[in-house]
Length: 280
Image (cartoon, rainbow, N blue to C red):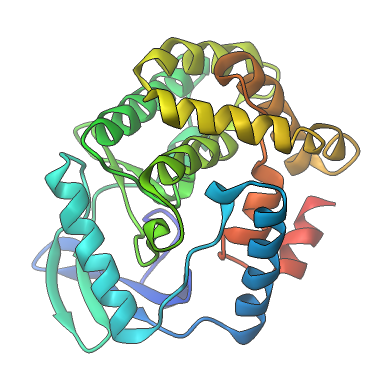
């Protein structure tokens, strides 16, 4: 439900249709939940088997529910995160397999694309990292903490959207929080081309605030999936940006970026073949 990408026409997004509306002079989002394509379910099963075989349990893809069940998961997750002090959309209304949600600002990805320079980029990412730390301290987790699912409100506060999946259906809280760090780093790495030390330093400064068992799980992922560092070197610009994230995370969090496979296989935002094409 990325606020900067959708107009009044319905758009398919994460097995849902999202339409931006103007109600009473206020931007709102009408979100309806559809079934996950059969091909995606098959890809998820294969990916989960691979992740399990590699010992990368935090990267398993949680079930993608359909219709009313997906709506109920999102409503519950919104309530849980609000209780943790997280800025999330307000549920303004509901219908069969639909929710009417408040707008909480443009996406972090759009703000990073339009940033005036490194200072603004660093400020946005620093505030996002701080919000993830704060939510985790309260027992929160996000599931899809990519930059496109993070928002920046008019008052500068960082918010989060899209919760129709729940990682705790397939993993413990420790793994779900480790997953958040990997996805966040993978999502912002492309905006740090040539500045990997800046991203690494930001992660390193915040590492002491991360729970020990979560940090340990992130480090385990590094040792099990380190082969991905070399795998991104000769691909397209998107993969090269994720390769840069490898270096940043190695320095800042004692781990390797695994965003390439995450973004392609468990993100669920686009067809796998289109995603592969976009890398080359």
